[in-house]
Length: 122
Image 1 (tube, helix red, strand yellow):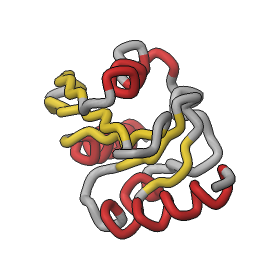
Image 2 (cartoon, one colour):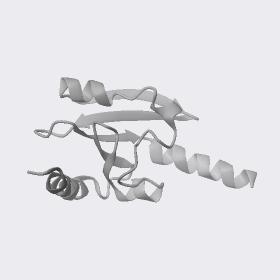
Image 3 (cartoon, one colour):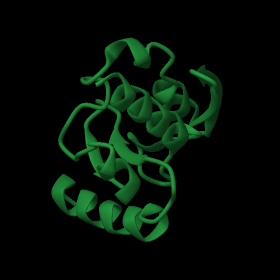
């Protein structure tokens, strides 16, 4: 199967499973290109075709994507953003090498708090 067809199928399956998840979720290639985003991620500006680490490389220093892909198992890392603990996950797509799902529980809350703080400063 060619890459475009594969990614169309992966994107459809991704939307079925993650479309309504209340945190930003991305389907990403090993090279860090975003293949698909859910509604929440789209609402915060996430978009397919962009490198996930392009917007803020500093925040990606703790990325566990390679570890998850190399070991072919989910990896979790907890971090603190402001007053919110983020439970970050990198989960390889079963049976499809070099693709993974990435999300963090608590990201939406943290981003909303940051947006509210920025609005108060204006």
